[in-house]
Image (cartoon, helix red, strand yellow):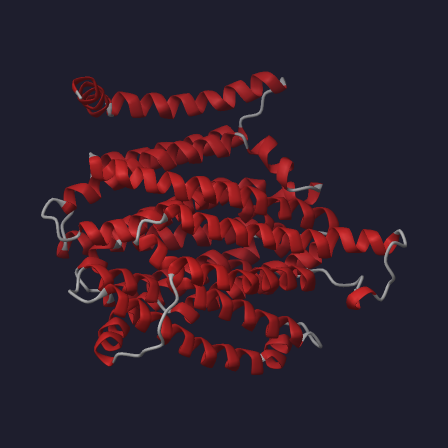
Length: 501
């Protein structure tokens, strides 16, 4: 129980900081949907899908390898840190330079003629992210959650500041005559350009601070450390690519797969902007999963040598499923007021119906993360390649075949289908090679009932606003009552333990 409390405490710190940071960052969606047109939002969706995809390539699974080789391989953690960071800096120089030089080709391929500078900025953003990955991982490994959260929050605040400065304040000052139209090269026709520029400035400015908090490193490339880490991390690269293929490439491909005039009076790029904006409404689930990953990954590796670790992993999974299922229902039944609160404009409401599917997809992503511990602690990461390759193929196939038919629904189903397939395959192989006593039947029951209640609540519509709100949230009470009924023995045991303690 003490281990679970420790994990819960770390997750709470990461979660609180992530929720606070993302809540601040979420204001940007209000800014974008207020000050930018849907075509700019479509460009933002496409380019950031590319950034998310290439970010996996730039770090190629080295964060997980760093945890593995710093905790369970009888190696000096300091040497592992120096070597891993040096390796990432070296590879980043190569990859970043290649992407920078390929910018004109990318601009043409993604239909941004004459805007190669967007992809040069993208190369710099990716490079800055990559060289910060291992210092952030070191803070997590050392259980310095507050330092990690503080650095992330500063980065988010800088990003928000530059976005508001470039998109809201400067245009307003130019319009009212406080600044000249030629102020530092101000361009009134820029939209997505200022989003990228703000990100670039925020990431560049945070580098010295993060390096100072994590501890400066000595450049060294030790072959006896690099070779096994590379063999361990390479399959994780493909795992990451598959995950981001589903999460981001669906948004990247959406505008190119959706037939023109599918939505009357809305271009494919504008529809992609609406689709991408609705992904943001599933952000609370993603925040919980991200916070959990920050705390759980180093925790899982540290516990891997304990003979009781499989039982602990099962308990963590069960608690995770219960919490996230309740969260899924609570968000879904309240979408009618949560959605308009953050996405300004009637056009975005046309995509609200896909949010429960996206929430369930993200929840399954969290389940998959829990399950994936078996191949990480047994060094069988090669299985992640096949599992995630199948998931990526499922995701792309669903996008290609269903988006032209079902539009937004087809895009959302690609998320759900990918993570569902990956979860099932990972569970089957995991139980074969590293058996963990998961409460599978009960966990699946919670997921199915929770998903059903989520859609029931979303489509429930009573004439009275107050009655409608109460009826929808009564469904949250139903899932809570089910949990209390099925978990009553565990709850009573916990209460008695606290009384006796």
